[in-house]
View 1: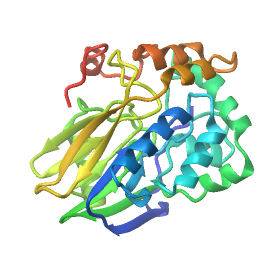
View 2: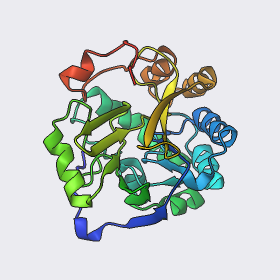
View 3: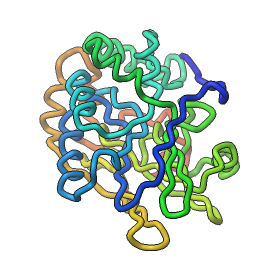
Length: 283
């Protein structure tokens, strides 16, 4: 499996300036068109403009509608950075680059869903992936915010709430940020240490291993001081997503997770996060 440790000098980092009001944060759309459509409806009902909607990457993934998902995302005009999946597709690689252990269940499943996704994407969608930056930076209030996928140093690094603060701290130092918005690990959390805040808004393409089919996103809001981060549940037509995934080309286990809210396996999870399986998330 490919492991990315990027050359920090070669990064494509876009600074989008000062944001105010509500900023909608989410990750891991994972080719789940129904969840994306539900999220766009939330943004519209909350009056959040597309330029204030930011994805932490992996627009493509385990579900059945990669092409429709990319086109819907592109037409929405929200912002995204590249996840490992976008990098691999863009560079015409043969695996998802998720940094799964070779021979693991996740590795085996990726040999089903990744070629499926690759076979479905139009040139227009691949060209769109080419436009996505490695990182997005902005300021909100007087806080500097950086958006990463795994970490600033490695797009495929799994960082959880239980991951030692020292690992997170180096990201704040390298980016000179007050807040880091991250994705990749699939679980929503916030971790504050003195004046630094690490936020993972969660993913909308798969449940958070909490035994519920709904998925998670977050809204950052500067209407109150200090900045408020509100984690939100998203209900969507998961029965349709499940049905579309039962196409004999995708892992049935992932289709089952869409409905059960439980992950097929916990190979990537640290012990603390394994203990939380099936328990309601306190956010």
